[in-house]
Length: 122
Image 1 (cartoon, one colour):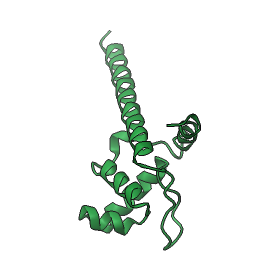
Image 2 (tube, helix red, strand yellow):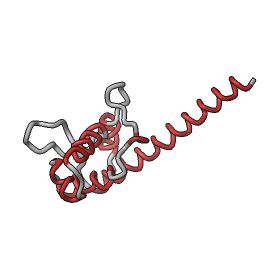
Image 3 (cartoon, one colour):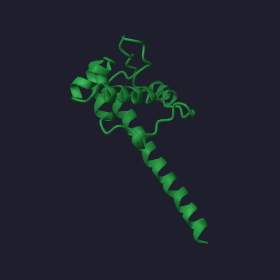
Image 4 (cartoon, one colour):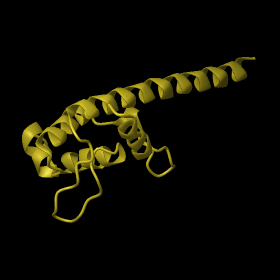
């Protein structure tokens, strides 16, 4: 992956308070849905719905998660969302980064919990 693509990816995954990706609450089908969208180059919730045999509401929630992750653009009415990830290789790099964020946030959560427990025990 080129340096500029990594920089763009970092910008898309910015951690402002409104667009924080809570990777622990990502749908179990998140990665599969991301692969479908990037492979097909089409940002329709109905595509995810049909390919994964899920309900429309769940497909829309998946699309919202994909938007927060920077994989697709914002909803534009009945038009397909823009697919921002160029290819499967870039997507795999992004998914690896998301998994790392999950591990780091879990470690931080565990450390905070440990400190809290320790404070109450002493």
